[in-house]
Length: 180
Image (cartoon, rainbow, N blue to C red; front, side, top):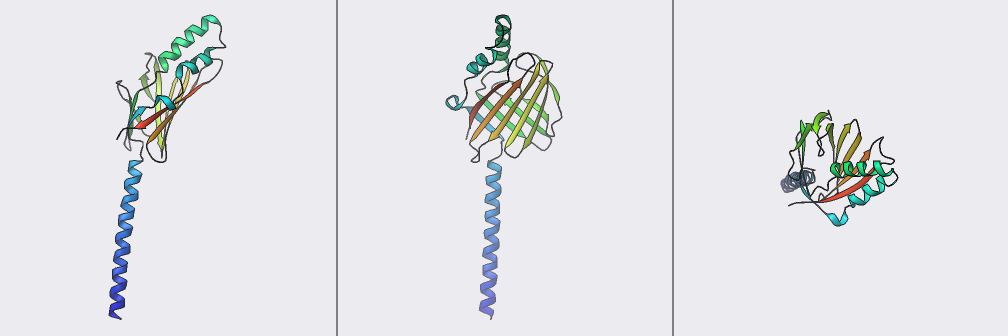
């Protein structure tokens, strides 16, 4: 009887330790798959932004086409590096060597100056493996939808840009690889 009790208590201890170990491994894996990190552009898997812009302005008249092309090129540079950090209160995204964009984590908009020098309202919301950045101005709206792959190594940014001045929506994707 005592041997059986000793066996059961030992078995219980082994199961408990296994659960703690597996739980901590799962927690570590979950933390590693967070969007927080630095990512480098993979041009091969990314869309060619210039081709997307040419398609978007192709139906405009000659004068508006050149203006729209120049504005879209300024607003849509191919970022070489993206760094994301988050806390319960704030999300920060830094692209290339630009100052970081910091917004409240709950999605409240903040005033921000875009790459073309124009003033926009920017907001960000983080949910699981997705980060949605939204930029709105008098000229239109841009949404950067960042999605992390299940293995945590690839970040895909799907861009959707709309404006009453464009004949069609501008959409493209940029693919980034996590830096170790």
